[in-house]
Image 1 (cartoon, rainbow, N blue to C red):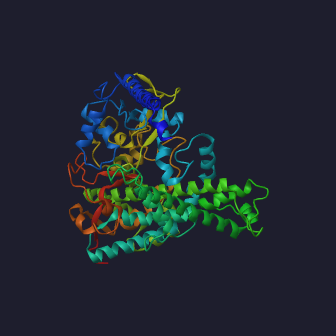
Image 2 (cartoon, helix red, strand yellow):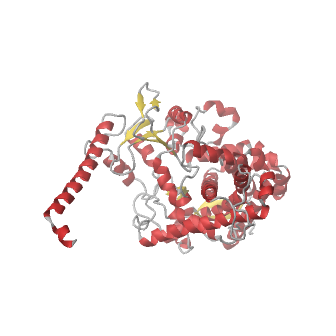
Image 3 (cartoon, one colour):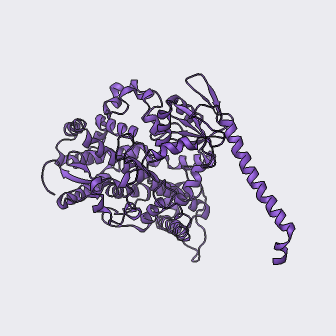
Length: 558
């Protein structure tokens, strides 16, 4: 064998193979450069594409700034339109079309374009294969239809008392921080709250993360931090043998944990009860849909008596439950952090918000009982909802990435039409929310009044889409907005949060992801003047976990 490898013939074959791959790679790059050259976008080079322009924008931004700000900054730097092409080959999956125009975004969602294949590659380590977020076609439709009832407004209203109880624990923890006078990461405390809420909605379990830890959630959260997050870790850590092992271990732990919960729930209820009891937690909906599609849902096990789901359905259900646990806690916690940050910066808005809570929910001391007994009052908090929407306009948690198709053409306001085949279509919620052509000269102002019902007609169709629109909109958006209103109603009249980036040293030993990866202080430390810029950790999160000091508004301690 060794002699064979030494033969000139083998060497020639290897050289030809390598040259063939290199030639194909270069041909692909040339085809991409040629296809984009002359299209709307930044100055384009046949040699470098847009790598220099994108690199300049990145270098002028904080090291860990979320990538969704870069196209927005490109648009402003080169005075581009709201739709343009970007060529970053050989980095990334496909060249992309940056879309920050509401009408064009609406065209893509109305067409129901498929999710881009890069999304599934990104999410597989976190959720498993064939998750509802990134799949397309009949498989997506099947799971979406199955779980729709679990997120209906009618059902979610029945969960409000439990949400209130979880938020009261959060209030107690904030009071403890007031007593200590310490600096802490608000994103960490808020994430633990939202995990407790989503645990009840999805698995009918109380994780009690606000007062302890849970192995499944710890595995999920570590898996998030092992994703290729932008600039937050050593890029080699993901593919280091130890990193590979940790991802495998976390994946197995989550599958085993959720699988056991499914099996125990199914076995304890019995197949007959599952068929006749249709509850609306995600786990019960999964079991009911499985049982209702089977004449005999019992598979023989070793003792021949224990009911058991078939493995294919069980794995699919586990994947969707992991998706709900991730999406249900991650975005809401970050949004609440930015709500508190913006209210601190705009005391007039804060005062107006508190006045609405006082008028509709009564004194703060009795608000929890009022919400529990009359949850419909949350629907009357119009200004509160407007504050949420304005916060999400300025700090959206994600974007939409769709697959270009032969039959999907983008019709621009300029009258131009571009085909999307071979491109990733990036619906940039951050760029859309910061587009002065959409929101006017006050685009950078925090002005919740723009979302009041009396002003709704002034907002272009498709301009506000942090949960996306159309068939692929976020299934959990009603829960997110409901939960957020409960949190605001019980917190905003009690506490005031002071951003404490200068006190980051006080929390560097707290064991969090941010502490393990250090605090990066090199280069710029704001994005367009905002020092609490977003970073990519699974979704868009406030940098450093938003270190704060908290005070009580009534001046009391504890």
